[in-house]
Length: 404
Image (tube, rainbow, N blue to C red):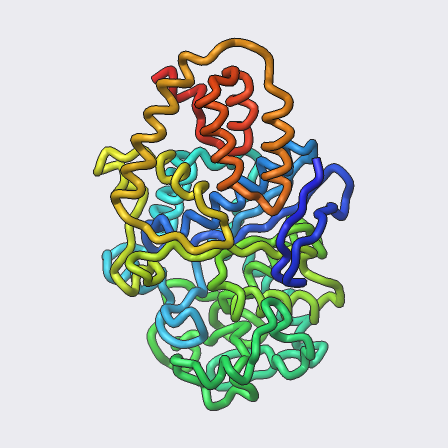
């Protein structure tokens, strides 16, 4: 089965071939565990799941890593403001550790509810890889890519001539459109924090999470954890890195800058990014107050796999506008398909249908066409084995749901 994927790095579809034959190393940007993940967040993990299932279906083994951000992600999504987890911990009157573990477990429950495969997946935590992060920072400093300011250690983006190559980011336009506070000590607007000093280092309040380092007591910047953990568990370069399109301009370009400057080789060969889920035309986000969670779906008696079905009706590179009517419609469709599944014949797999199905998924994970083919297979009363074969990738769990 040939697989072609749209690579954000080259801005075109490319035939996918893994570095190591038969084994695919894949890194997916994971959650910042300070609150319940919303359904917009979960689109990234459904993309990763469909990709993993497609690769495994084609005969390769997938070595998958999803990081858990439990320190360093500031409220500005940049280098200013309070740590999201510390802010949540203070608000709820709990420790940062307790907050992180509670919402991490909530994330795992969402993965289970959405039938997202996680067997053999590694979920490394940023707080458990401080040593690895510091080691990369020391290399960057030794090579002249890092400099100190009064509030931390920063990466000098002017030293990396390819900075912004992912998504062809125009750094000048990014500066002109910036809404975040800028550290006046930064050499360039696009420079970013590698290590931030704690207020306690200068006599201020002690943070809930802080560590000793060659630069003083503090905590790592948000981006370095991904460089450190992907390298530790997947080596460098690895095959595929995925995430939401909001990570392209800053987070993913910063990962590339850190990793490639430290080690002189590419970070990842393929970069896949999913579009947003919108609500009335606006990105779904906690800051806008327009988020919905998997628990919200369940409270309305909507099965989480109905949300998965709805998501698969759109291509991962196309935005989707969330409405309750749309997801309720998907729930009714899922119920109908489960009922029909029970009445299908026990004949052999329809090879022609499966060949078409494989061609759709092999063409940049074209789930809308694959889903249309699934509906057609039900309408034509294809065999139960044919549906089960398609469900190996779609993950709608017909065999399990039909028994409930």
